[in-house]
Image (cartoon, rainbow, N blue to C red; front, side):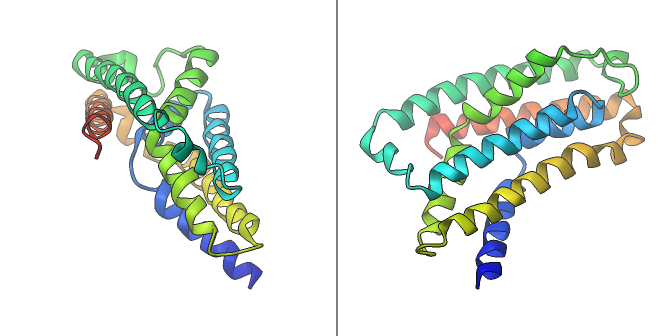
Length: 202
């Protein structure tokens, strides 16, 4: 029974995380560049762990008690994603050797980490997936919510580290500048679509 609950948590966690989103696109890009991969993967996985823990412990009720929280998060997240998407479109338009995986400029550690954390903590969809949905599912397992939560946390760590370190398998493809331009354009499109969905309430 315990293993069944654990693997249910793993399956639920993967089902919500795998879909392409702001976090995943950023982790993929850092993995391709081989820049601060450990820190980025760890930041995403630990953030998920904290949010999942809050969800299974009942913290999702806070949003009901503070009705202003959801619209405030949506507005802030939409603004940040719109800015990040615009920057990705600009990188796609410029192209050039600076985007080559082997020769790209090493971005400083702290700006990279702060961007990663912003993409996580300013995105209301992350709260919906981890705190609300996983928290709600965990209530089905009275007294064993923590086992379900542990499974979901395991899924998060497995996915982000697989994405970050597995991205290097695609490096031969991204040795071509045009591939980077397509990736940046795709990232920009994803960011703007998420921002639009936040504004429209989707």
